[in-house]
Length: 288
Image 1: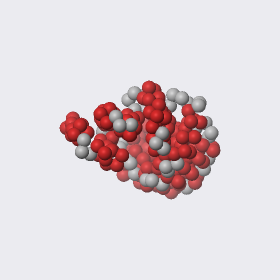
Image 2: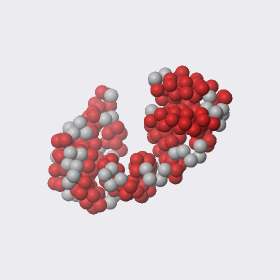
Image 3: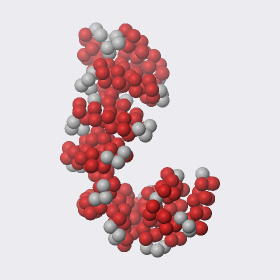
Image 4: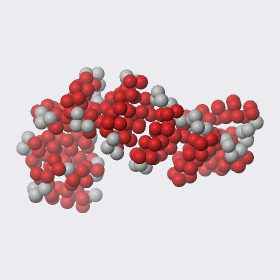
């Protein structure tokens, strides 16, 4: 509730001094901090009835609606708060996060872009924007955003990991390998980076290197579904069909997402007529 506390201090120190903050606003904040979100929303609505131009009340009401799953009302209130206080990035940030949670990256991008135009040196916002760009295949825009995030914060580990993922999506495998090797010199316990390194090696047909990298990932995090999936692809290229199928099965059991991935992945077309592979997919389907 960081922004609620911020708006409490802001409103009390500035707006209340100008006699424009109804008492209901402070009551709403109190109940918000106590986790009584529906009651808080009532007081914020009452405050808005007395002062419809009170941006912090609209924002806090939006947060209350957001927390209680009333997304449509939350969106309306975030947008109203943003309109009333055009310089404030927070309504756009929260709106973007709401869209991201509901798997709507295109609307999230618009909101993040609005937030960043008001808060341009925020590495976390740029990282989030890069993720949203990546989700819809705007990989060049994603790379630009992630590079800006890293430029602002050179120690931002999550942004560096995301850069490796984006480089792989751009099929810039040599760059992914170089950047990943550099990153892993300092962060050897990160399984995602090892997994992405394995994938880049795999796409370059360096299967021995890919095997070593994927085993490093799984030694660190044995339950990483994507690592098992990539290990299956690597084993398949090395001619170890049975173990490849087992790895794909493990990935699917860890995360059902990999079932649809396996069904549609052209890398697995060689297994389409394999009885064990077909039976594995059918058994997984029935189990789920």
